Image (cartoon, rainbow, N blue to C red):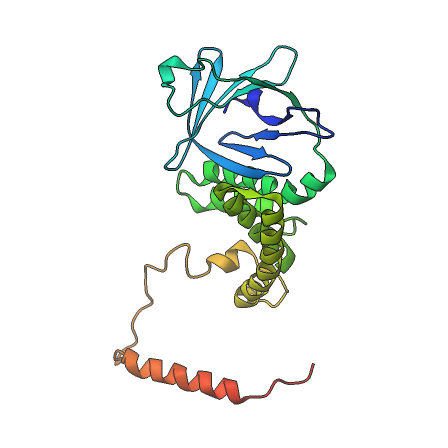
Length: 259
């Protein structure tokens, strides 16, 4: 989506809007207080006269027309699926939307983390496109590492999970009530998952994890094995599995030590 069209807009004043539109480089977010909201990820964007035609991904491929409006803001049109591209905009109703520096606090509380995740996702998509791990990781850490210490703690990881949960729910279409309930559940599940993730990779026991710890033994791929010891023989994996099972049973019998 052209930079000039990106931003947040409302159709009935920013203080008490009937509809809100948030435009990013590759997404449209429709917020409708009291009704269903929707995240549309864009498959194609192209100029169509003075309009910009954005086609959403997925089976329905919804179309949205946007153009810069005189005096600021944007004009929005949602053409019927029966209207061919070469006939757009036709008699499609046009709604003028004014730019907003902020939206009502209740909507900001509900959607703010998700929109921040969406912005980060689009930055990561660009950084990760070439396949090189470092730019991709750097883009992720720029978003996820809130206190900029080079590590991710449980709260930071839980924030990522909440943002991803918002994106999944909004992509399917959801009301504010359903979204709030879903995010509340994601907060509990996300914090538990974050704690498990940190404990799984916190090799230096600092209560947080680094990208290097997450990628240990993964990037770069351990393609060159060490020299084989003389006289060594392959260990039957069946026997190894039995030993792992015995260790698991042993540890389950050890009582927790007092802190």
